Length: 114
Image 1: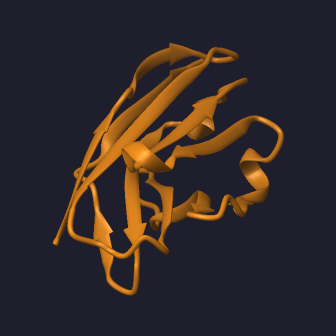
Image 2: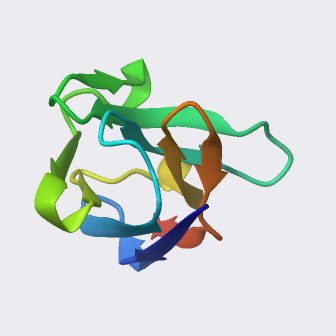
């Protein structure tokens, strides 16, 4: 079982920045993928970015060049640096962990005002 604890959401003006963090604990395989998904009201949950334990990243087209995902393997923590935020980035952001099983965090709210 894996527990995910997220932090770093909040309210920011358009053009601003936020940094999300997600720490994993429990029992899991060392080969894994961590990432972030988001869900806005009335919309489906969508991928934002993922990073494997070897450092391979994947981004949604809508965030490329603005968001950066990174991880600290010894701390089992993943980060999402979000720059040049837009109102359409407003959503509940979920941390995701996959090692053959899939785990989700409780979500952290990001609100970008225009």
